[in-house]
Length: 96
Length: 206
Image 1 (spheres, each protein chain N blue to C red):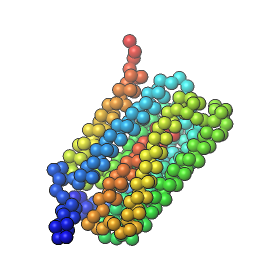
Image 2 (image 1 turned 30 degrees about the horizontal axis):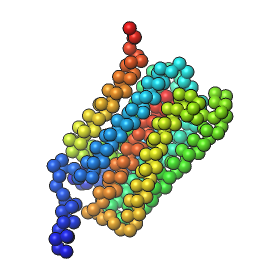
Image 3 (image 1 turned 120 degrees about the vertical axis):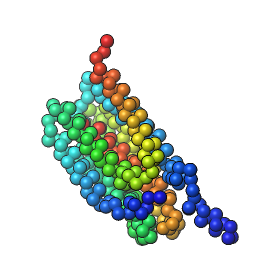
Image 4 (image 1 turned 180 degrees about the vertical axis):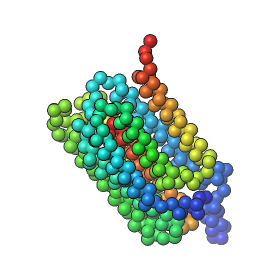
């Protein structure tokens, strides 16, 4: 088990990062003009991915778990990305 | 009696093929299925939004500051949950009980705020939605209520489970050596928080 390894994790630091990033995210979406769609989407999705990764790694302790568990979770995420990617590609790719 | 004690002891030091306790592994497998469930919902949202000629800017319909506050509350509940686990692992049941109660409170506040948000959306008449913003009002309304509603249902289930775990904690059922229940429900709770982080960005901000 990984108790010894992750008892030193500074959960409050992660918490302030998550809170801070949420404020930055809301500010970014309200400041950036919505005509710059690509910059808006890339920036906001980037912030969300960073926050979600922090929750998974530190709060769900994935960082300290066995590699096999990481592989199970990663494979699910890859399949999920393919599912969403195919949907987006259908819209973005030129139609015959 | 002695045999029973040995059995109980073995239960906590159980060796598994994966090296991960069965209940924790079961929760992770369940969460993987939940990833696919929410991917389906988020994927549908993205595809419908791309394909729809008219899609209102979410910030003109939804209350972003209120939901940002709600997001912060859910993050608070995640940190209190992990602190409860850290408390019992350090042999501090008082800390565990306090933080479990706080998690329960934050979860209930999140649901209450979401309820207020829904009520306002359904009953307030705007220029775009003169009969209120509801699932029948538009494609956006339909996808919004389906996605956030399913997430809200998950939060509700989490609050019920945390209430159960908190009850057990208050009765002194968890010890430094035996607290798998807290870790397992904690995983579910953090996942619900993680999903909300993604939903908040995609539905409210983009």
